[in-house]
Structures are given as C-alpha cells and as structure tokens.
Length: 337
Image (cartoon, one colour):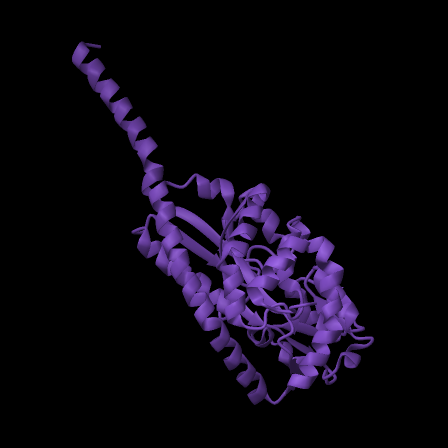
C-alpha cells in the first residue's frame, strides 16, 4: 500500500470512529418518568406539563417518556426501580420515604399538621423542605420539587362524622407508621395496601374505607364502591419529584439547568391546579349520585383534631423533635401544646 492509500485508509478509520463516538450525542437523552396514578389527576397532568417544558427547553435534546397508572412499576416497586436506574424520574407520595429510611418525611403524614395551603408551602418551599430533599441523596436520589395533591377526605360505606364512627372499620392506608397510628387513634384497623390494589380491596370487602384527596378518589372510581365521603381535610397528600442521582449528576450542566427551569414551571402549574381538580372531583362525585358527601362542621373537626393530636406526641421520637418544632414554628400550629 502506498503512502497516500495508507493515509486514506487511516482517515476512513478515524472518520468512522469519530462518527460512532458522536452518534450517541445526536440521540436524545431519554427520561423515563413513571408514576402510579391516572393521567388526568393533578400529578398526571403535571408530569405531562414537565415533559412539554423539558423537551422545549432543551431543544429536543431530552425526551421525557411519561408512564402513568402503574404502566411500568407498581407502588412497591418504583423506588427500587429508580435506585437501580431502570427509570430516571418518579413523583412518589411523601409517605413512601419513611419505609425507605428517611423518616423525617413522615412529618407530612401527621393529621392536622397544616392548617392551610399557605402554611404548607411555607414549609415545602422553605429551608425545611429543601433540607428534607437533601436527605434523599444518601439513598442515591436527588429531590427536585414538591408537588401538591391536596388535603384528604375519608370514605366508607357508613357515615363518618365522629371519631367513634371509625371503630372496627378496616381502613386502607399507605405504608406509613404515622398513618397506622392515625387510624388506630380513631379506633380503626389500618390496612396497608398499594394504590393499584385499593379498588379491588373495596370491591371485595378486604377494606371498608380509605383516605385520599378527592381527585384520586374519583379518578380511581372509588365512589362506585363507597357510599359515604367525609370532607375532613384531616391529612395531606403530596409528592416529591425525584431523579436517580447518578443519572442527574451525569447530565451536561446546560441540560441540567434547562431541566431545573422546566421543573420550576411545572411545579407552579402542579400546585395551581391541585385545588381546582379536587373541587371538580368532589362535584363529579356528588353528581354521580353514588356517594353522599358530608362536610365536617368546625365543632366536629375540632373533635377529630383532639382525637388525633396524640399521634403527634407518639411520633415525635420517630420523626424528630427538632424537625417537628421547625414545622410548628412555620405553621404556628398547636402553639403551647
């Protein structure tokens, strides 16, 4: 082979190697965003909004594939899938992090801890919330944002107006020591079940009732199985949007910055629609004629609160006295307890 041919051959080899090296950078970075609720819930809509914003902000360099309603992983599987890198992004309920070993998140499960959404946002958007997200890093997780889903209602096939009405009922809860204690304080038997199992459990009588924000209650058709719903606003259900830390840290800084901006916008949207979605769900439940809706009076709500206040004291060693004090200060709730 003469010198020209040799250099030509080298050029072809180099060119092919360079093309192979550059090819992956031309393909979009794929983010699998898995969640367990319906696409038409506040979380489902917020996930779709993030997809739109992220793909636009990165000029198509990132593609977000949203998988709702347990399409990829069920309640009990999704966190492990994220840690293993099988999916890149989740928005699990805050109750999921206690069983993962970050017990401080269980502060959000305490009954009547947040008297209003304004107080809630003061906690999630302030130093307390950011400090909690930081604690996830030791689990291989980066916390990006808190998404609202609303205050919870109680349901069963009998009216629930006083704490005494819960006696002997089997009530579905998320796996949470705090929620377990909450139901026991009301005289009920807590039954920890994955979200995708609840409808069938209600249908078969495995559980008598449940607690959920109205949007989850309606989109999962629980009103077909529950004759009574009490607007108690006794507890809160929110989500933390999280990503696999190794994946997130490995992104080009410009991409990561663009995604952070998209997440901020999606979070504003998520929190704005949550209340509206729950109000519309309650109205749809009422119009269905299948479930009687009862709103607690101020006097009745105070009776519930007194019955459940012991849960705060019981869970203080588990959640942390200092953290509870911070939340109480932010919330100005239960002053002088």
